[in-house]
Length: 327
Image (cartoon, rainbow, N blue to C red; front, side):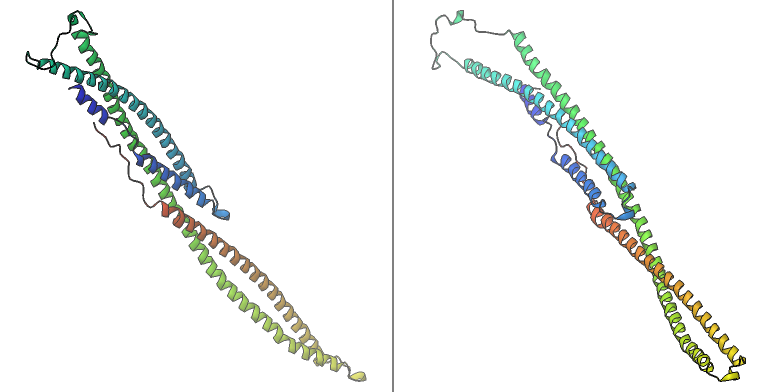
């Protein structure tokens, strides 16, 4: 292998950082952080440190760890690149010197007695301008080639290590990404089930409210219906108090009228008690309705955040980045 060939391969062994590597990790970090930010807008009992949130935090930590390892690899790649360029510089300088020497020797080789430009240079044979011997000349070139070979070997190893790191970190992030998506799916299923149960209870509560309101109206009507008979009984008793002298007799009619008034009073009292209980029940049902509706709004908000805000950003995983180069 000639030094010129080595230079070419050295140039091909530069180790650039693929732009998609940092970009994909930054994108994943942004997605995970935005999911955490959106989930902070959950309300009331749904604002819980659930498995989704734990997995999202682990995902961010994993991505940060991957980024840190990639930064270390990038530093190593930049250091190796500097070493490669230093070796390349030495080879370039050696090659240029050899090209100049080759042109001079080639020119001397073709000089003839009839060549133009030949002349006397008195005493030139006594001038010793040499700085090396054939052995040291060859050793100098070998000393330039050997470091370049070592740097190329180190570059190849570093490229392999970076390729392995890229695959490892990509697999790690994919596992976390998939785990978070599964957690999201399970959580959305749980919230949807809870929302459906709330809707079922709300429907039953609305039915009970309707029936209770009907009962209240019936009780009020029953109380109103008892008012006229009670007035009649009271009026009869009042009129009979005006009977003269011994006609103020506690006869059967008197007894029946008193009994009727008391019976109607008892009935109205029982109806009012039932009305009071029904109104209390109605108030409880209305409160339950408000609570269920609030719970439904909480679940709907949570589903919207997880499904529309978060999962819409997590539909696809960035393609696995690869280090493109030469071996």
